[in-house]
Image 1 (cartoon, rainbow, N blue to C red):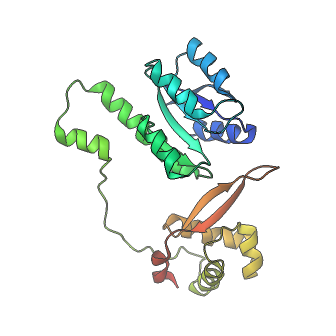
Image 2: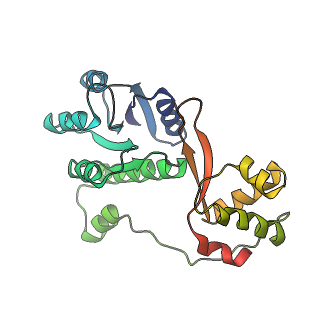
Image 3: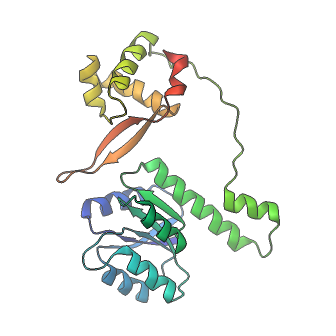
Amino acid sequence: MIKVLIVEDDPMVAMLNTHYLEQVGGFELVQAVNSVKSAIEVLEGSRVDLVLLDIFMPEETGFELLMYIRNQEKEIDIMMISAVHDMGSIKKALQYGVVDYLIKPFTFERFKEALTIYREKLTFMKEQQKISQSELDSLILQKEKREPTVMKELPKGLTKQTMQLIWKKIESLNGQAFTTDEMAQLVGVSRVSIRKYVMFLTEIGVLENEMVYQHVGRPVSKLRCIDRNKIEFYV
């Protein structure tokens, strides 16, 4: 099992990351802490393979923990998970060798992808003593065999007419994220029906699910259009 330390000062985000982690096989949470100081204490006393690291925290930043790990030459990988999205911070994190950088809010799919790729790379490197150039290219570049795109028919129970109504409302939002409840009110159909349509649109890559963090309360699941081209066949 890959031992994971979560370093996140927001209790709700830490809980969400823990929940996500539990859904990806091959990983085990060592502890979730809310400061760099607490993280160092865990690293000094426990085996940790991967740190899921936020940047802005009380007293010290995630970059200070990142530099500590590098200066101590610890064999620990770091995956940044932060709302910080300026190029300077991202470049700095990459220069220090983070294995991935997730910008909040992120989807479970993106989180799972990051951990799955990391797990596969780690497993491959443990099993191999020598490696060919093509294997190294595949490992570094994560080349994928892409299947030709096949248009799917609308699932049973979904109609083109309703899809057109929903799509018009989505277009009117100009890229603004929305909940299924909000879309149901805009279109004037039930939440159950809307959920079926947005699930299909998410499945074919038109919409993306994201978690929106609020000042109070739990994160809200919202949908956002990410690829308008894939909808043409259905409207």
